[in-house]
Length: 135
Image (cartoon, rainbow, N blue to C red; front, side):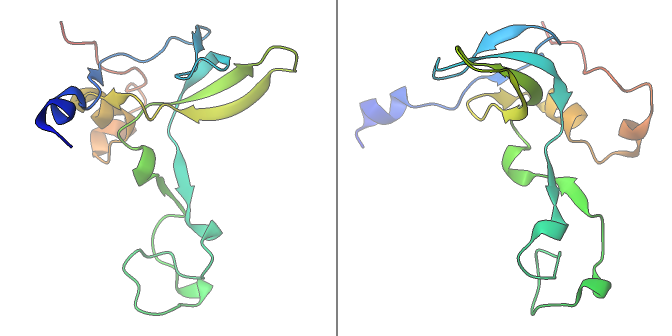
């Protein structure tokens, strides 16, 4: 890759705000549109692993009764990208409700901390809205 080509390829700019519920957007490839139901956290279900172990650092297969930790954990693949519960609006077909992760977008630091926080303050019921976008 030449220096000019590598300079033109850059990471997406971080976003500071979430899509509003009820707003309609087109997909990144403009193949369909979707209506946002609300932001959500994409979780990984450790019960769906093909082996009975749920630790990532495992030495051998362990029986299911020795599982340690939470069943649902934040999906590391989508931790830096926004996920939304959406209604797909495809021409000529019924609207379909699903979860959509926009991997072409990156969350800003404060927004990522709100979305996938492990801090005890994130469990506060008053923490339902993301931080205000920085000016």
